[in-house]
Image (tube, rainbow, N blue to C red; front, side, top):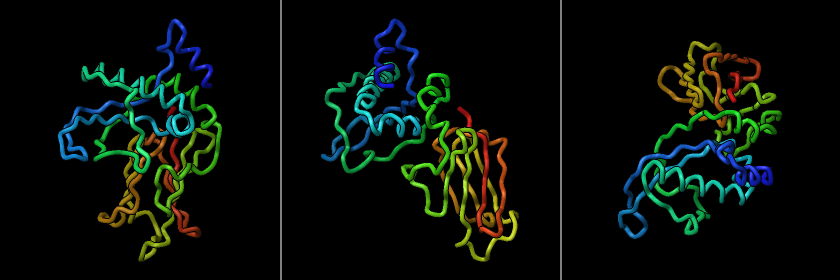
Length: 214
């Protein structure tokens, strides 16, 4: 894939290759010396991160170039990517602002994550899931959420005590209208309007099924 992308970037139409990301607003924060510094949050699609960025220096350098162009286009700020510093002991500096990544263009991104779509199994721990929660991607078409309810007292006998709230990348489950027992973001987009929830009493698990949108 790396060679294919390199050829595409050298072609007459390099715009065919897209990286799903979102550029935030300009903020002024204090650096380690207590001086004002400009900060711009840039968020990249989590699936693209796991498939490409985490393992490939080529894609990391490519991302820096794409980000520098996006920041210059949006904020008219020029960034020297040669002076980029990789954080070794932490993933971010300061607080990340809430952002939303565009879903489109879909076609180029689908080709990149084709191997992920065909997989089936637990989603990696990089998503910082709580220990009582398990995400499974079924054939790349359906996301399965399994929430263990063993620690809930008194035990749950039906779904009346549970309030499930979702959008295309976020799941929130509230117990007895006052206690949040699960608050996670999905690594993929889902069709939350077609969600199905099941309470498996024998296993003490709340299972949520929803189609994946690519």
